[in-house]
Length: 248
Image (cartoon, rainbow, N blue to C red; front, side, top):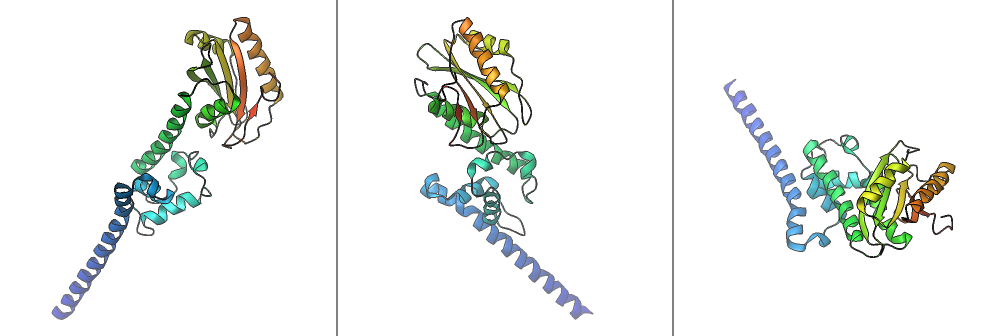
C-alpha cells in the first residue's frame, strides 16, 4: 500500500509538471507578439499578432495566436467587418471575458476616431469623396440607421459633426427643425448630410428623396448652403452622393 501511494504521488507530481510546462509554453507564445512590437514597431506585426496583443492569453484548447486567427477568420479577414462586431458577439469566444472584449472594442473604436480626426484636419471639405471619408467611419458600419449633419464655415472648413437621429434597421426619423437649430447654434454657413443603410444598399428610397428636398428648402431659407447628402453602408469604397448624381 505504501509503495502504491508513493507511485500515485509521483504520477500526480509528473502530471502537474507537464501542466506547468504547458502553461509556461503558452505564456512564452503569448509574449512573442508584444516582444516583436517592442523590437520592430506595429508595422512589423501581422494583423493576427496585433489582435493577439489585445486578446492577451489563449485557452487550454487554443493558444492566443490560434484564438486571434479564429477571430479574424470569422470576419473573412476583413477588419471593417471586425469593426462592426459588438460586445455580445465577442462573448461567444471561450477565453474572452469582459476585460479582453472591452479592450478589443476600444481599440477598434480608437482606430475609427483616428481616421475621422485625420479627415477633419483637411480643408476645405468641398467634394463628396472627402465627406465620405469623414462620415463612413462614423456611421457606415452601424447596425441601425443614423443621420449625421456636417457643419462647415463659409470656406467649407469643418466646424463640427453631429449624429442628430438614430432609428431602426431600415429607417430613421429626422427632425428638420432640430437639424436647423443644430446648424444655427454652430454658426455654420454650409452643411452636408449623411445617413447609413445597414443592409448595404446604396439606392435612396422615396423617403430619402423627400427628406433631402425638405432639408434643402429649409436650410436655403436661412441662407445656409446644402453641399451634399450621402448614403453610406458597411462598404468602405462606395457611396451615393445626391450632388454627384445631379439631384441636389
